[in-house]
Amino acid sequence: MDNNNLLYILIVIAASFVIQAGIMVALYLAVLKSSARMEALATEVKTKAIPTVEAAHTFLTEMRPKVDVILENVTSTTTMVRSQMQRLDATVNDVVDRTRLQVIRADDLLSRTLDKVEQTTDIVHHTVVSPIRQVSGLVQGITAGLQYFLGRRRNSRSREGMGVPQDELFI
Image 1 (cartoon, rainbow, N blue to C red):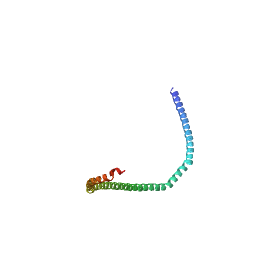
Image 2: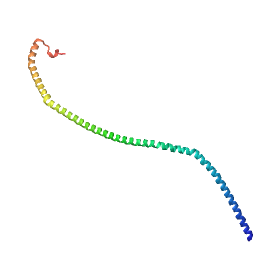
Image 3: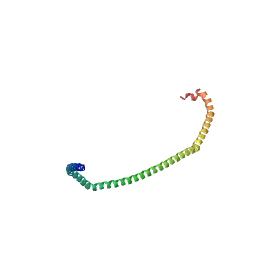
């Protein structure tokens, strides 16, 4: 048994070496096949992708100064626009403040003018209209008195002459 066992062990070891060698050969063939595919893929990438990448690189290299100029222009334009907007804001605020002051001044002027007109009206009323009314009342009183006094004389004369009072002749 000892020999037999040793023989069985040697057969098993030999079979495992053969199986291992078969697996190694299969792995070698798979790697060889994959390597061929990878080389074909690498060749395709080299022929198609590398020219595109180089063209993109060349384009970006050529465009970089132009893009830098554009960015610089945009930056300076933004700075200038911001400065102008600040000036415009200050100017508009100044105009609004001045307009507000002018409106206040115009309102004060109008209020003072209306007060002066009211005072002048009161003064004219007290100094001109009231005396004129008084004189007018006095004249009306004198006129009424004279008409009454002269009216008696006329009434006695008119009764003798015409017989129709003056008021009835007026239409």
